[in-house]
Length: 315
Image (cartoon, rainbow, N blue to C red; front, side, top):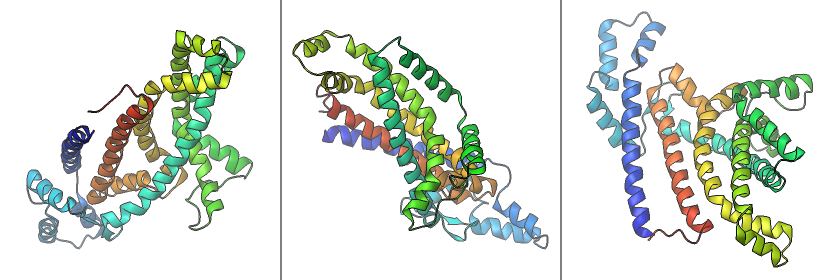
């Protein structure tokens, strides 16, 4: 296991190094820079002032040199200074990261609470009315764009019924208010993932329920729930766990749209605002945080494989 973890740690570092350079290069290739915004906001700035500001921010250096200086600072936890928030970028990113993690956690919990029972029940009655309705609902949910669903939820539950707040993150320290602001974003974010996981759960369970050892378990007199959950679901989990890792990336991307629609103070919305305002340190730090979260979740998925299936060993 230690050799596996060491090898994966090296792979993660290589991936993050490549990702950080690609992110930095793409941002450096964007038309304009923060100095252009300063000049447009203050017509009294001269060309000489612009040159001095570019030298101060290091924008007059070649891209490779700028990236190397940024990388050395980032390894110490310094992602630069946010011009938009007038604070170090890391101080701006961390509170938003907590809000996004809370949203994703609730969305994942709702996804599992809906997807697993739906997929398991559909697999036990293939071809039934329930199976047909579950398949129809899953296909419909997969087809719905998350931002459109978010707008419909706002229209129905906020504007029409007035049950839930339409935007914001809730008042800090008030759990009920925070949860009320989380319900619609979590549902809009997780519906597509729940449909995909439900479909895969049904498919995996159908493959397992037809195997001979399942008939043996029934012949021993075990009740239906034990046969399905202990002998069936446990052996069908490998592909389901794999899709969890892939859907985590989809949820990360979805937070950009969902947090923007609902006006939540999260990392996705922060990155969008930073891009629009050309706040490069925030963009670099935010996208890199997304990349770090994705690679570590996929490492966790690999470790869970060994827990679920004793035949898998990382020696």
